[in-house]
Length: 434
Ligand code: NAD
Image (cartoon, rainbow, N blue to C red; front, side):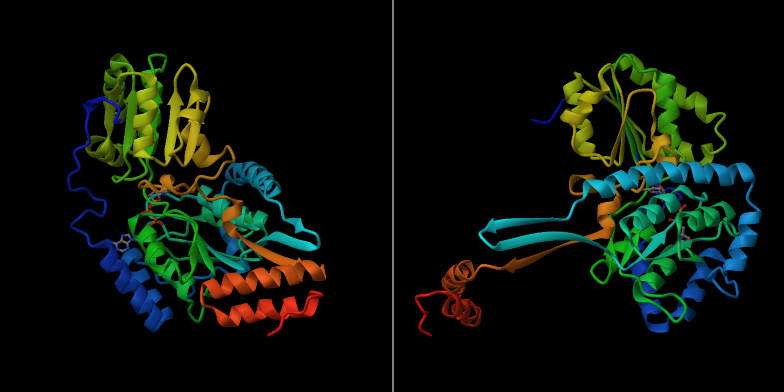
C-alpha cells in the first residue's frame, strides 16, 4: 500500500541550464562516439575544442608535467589528499578482504572453485566540468588499485581552460598509470574504443554529468561500466528531533552540485519541514554557489510530510535516491526499514559531505533509481568472479557422464551427450555401449 503524504514543497521542473528534455543527450553522445570510432584522435581533439575549448599539444601528461603541476598545489591540500586517500584505501582494503576465493568438494573427488580476478585495464573518469572533483580520483583509482588492476588510465577535463592541479595530484597519488586532461564524452569514448594515443580499456568507472553517464550507457557491452552515476541526489529522513538548520545546510550541500541535482526532505514533523524551507531561503542568501543551488532547490527540491516514521522510510525507499541521510531519534532503524539507497548517513554527527569528500566510503553511487538494482562503486566491481572445476574421482566422473548424457539429450544436444558418454565409458566398470 502506498504511504500517505502531503507536499509542503513540490518539485516544479522547468527549463534550466542542465541538459533538459529539449537537449537530445543520447543523439549528441551517439554522434561523438561514432566520430571518435571513425576518426580517432582527430575527432577527440575536435570535440575537446568544441565542448571544452581545450586543444593542448598532448592530452596526456608526461611525468615531468605531473611533477610541475603538483608543485603548484598548496602543501595543505596535498597533505589532505593523502589523509583522505588513506581513509579510502583502508575501507577498500577491508572490502577486498571480505571477498574470498574458495573451493568446495561437492561429491567425493569433485572440486568446484571460485576465484576473483582483477580486470586488466580500467579508465577512471574524474568529473570536473563545474568543480574539480578530485575526490572522484581517490574513489575510482584507489579502489581499482586495491582490487589489483594493473593498468589504470585517469581522465579529467580542464576547468575553464586550466589544468585542475589538485585533481592531477590526487590521480597521481592514487596510483593512476597514465593521466589525460580530457573530459566528457570524448574522454569516455576514447578510452572505450581506443585511439592512437589513448589505449583501449576493458572497463570505465566514475561519475559524471548527463553526457558522461549517457556515454557509458551507450558503450556498455563493448566495455564494462561500474554503474550509472549521474547527477547527484540527496534525500533526508527527519523526525521532530532534527535541527532544521542542519537539514537545510545538508540539503543545499548537495543541491550545489548542479541545477539537475534534486534535494528532498521526508519528515514526520510539519514544524521541521516548514522551518527547513525557511532556513534554505536564508542560507541561499549567503551561499556563494547559490546561483546553482537555488535553481536545483527551487525547481527540484521537495519537502514531504509523512504520517509516521515507518511511512517516511517507505516513501524514502520509493525515491531510491543516491544519498539518504537519517536525522531521527533512532537513525539505525533505516538499516532494516530501507533498502533502496546508494549510501546511508546515520545521525547528526555524519553527513553526505563526509562521504563525498573524506570519510572513506566510496562516493560513486547509483542515481535515477539505479539503487533498486545496484550499490555503488566498490572493490568487487573491478573483479571478475570466475569459477573452475576438477574431478579427481573416476567413478564420480562416470556417474556425472551418465547424468550429463541424459540431461543433454533432454535438450536435444547430442554432441554434449557424447562428451558425457565418453567419460561414462572410460571411468565406469559397467561400460557404456556407444
Ligand atoms: P563532467 O566532467 O561530468 O562533465 C564535463 C564535460 O561535459 C565537459 O568536459 C564537456 O566535454 C561535457 N559537456 C558539457 N556540455 C556539453 C554539451 N552540451 N554536449 C556535450 N558534452 C558536453 O563535470 P560536470 O558537468 O561538472 O558534472 C559532474 C557531475 O557528476 C555532476 O552532475 C555531479 O552531480 C555528478 N556526480 C555524481 C556522483 C555520483 O556518484 N552519482 C558523484 C560525484 C559527482
